[in-house]
Image 1: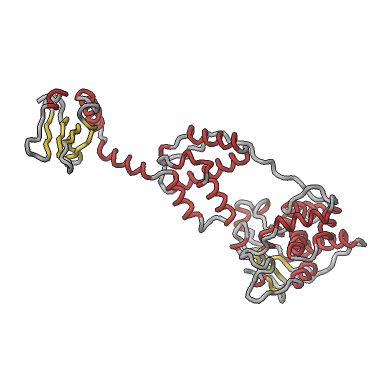
Image 2: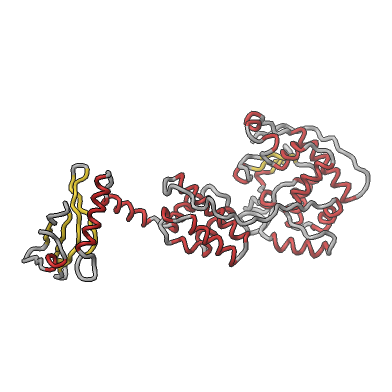
Amino acid sequence: MKLTNESVAALKLDGKKDLIVFDDATPGFAIRLRLSANGRTLCSWILQYRKAGASRRYKLGPAGPGALSAEKARALAKEALGKIWQGQDPSADRADRQAKNKLTLAKAVAEFLAVKQRHLRPRSFVESKRYLTGGYLKALHHMPLDTITRQDVAFCIRKIAHETSDIVAGQARAKLSAFFVWCMQEGLCDGNPTIGTRKPPANKPRERVLSDPEIAAIWRAAGDDDFGRVVKLLILTGSRRSEVGGMRWPEIDLDKGVWILPSERSKNHRPHVLPLMPMMRQIIESVPNLAGRDLLFGSHSPKGLGTWDEGKRALDERLAGQVQPWRLHDIRRSVATRMCDIGIMPFIVEQILNHVSGHKAGPAGIYNRSTYPNEVRAALAQWHDHLRTLIAGGERRVLNFQPSQAVVP
């Protein structure tokens, strides 16, 4: 029979629980009547076809008043038959789509964070989680991962920039882009929809370099508490604040006169060795060695010094305008700049700061594994002599330190 609205309305189950009636005009096109658990008769349009030697059944939609008419269902059936003849499989495509719909951005983000928690630095992980799971990208959380378009991302970035700032919007875009790169690598999606979206302007790199009088003023005002000791060690070494603030007793070898920063605590994941110059040793030896705690600084924090903001505010109050607005990280930039100003070669400054760039970038760094221990010791002696002169006044004198035994961590 030819399936029409009238002929379908006249169909009855007549005691059967399931009945399929095929259309005479369109191959595979049929109406299915099925008895539900509550005794109702359910009607739906289907298309039955063969694929890879097996019979498949594809539901086109519900039938009956307010649902698909016979003509619309027949048109859908012909469209599906066209796809089948082209080698596609509507049933498999629908199942694949249903599976992809379950993988929303929120679920993929949870997988991403579970993996990256073991690889990202703690601060980077916290920031990634804050941007990806917070309200910034809430509009994307429920969307299937593969359906998110560049337009969707661009809308979110514009909204964030309007409600907060370009800086926050830029960070959100960067975190989202890194997430989609990981998804592509894991085969969860085929593209990165952040590509081509507007990149909000970022903060300009800071250029603040402390003058010699400012460095001397900070040293004198730093004090002898944990925060003051850390600030002085930052000035003496140019190290990152997390490296000095998290310094541990097992890293200090007083017999060999070295501080060995392990790879798990360095930003570039490479061990770093610095000789303990007299001023450094004096500060380290003044730190009480608390029983049961291998961290030098801080009394409770598991990461070392934890009173950065309070210490900085107190230090600025003691400076009382002697130094223009500055940040702790400006010390690292200032140490690098002033070392070069007094004649220390830039590649030695990089080695002291544990930078993998410049002369050790690319293939050169693969073959040149030297840490220049003698040159680093001589450079730090020169820098410390310069600092001594700034702090105490008087004539500069470069001390002749004998090279210590090389340490390979």
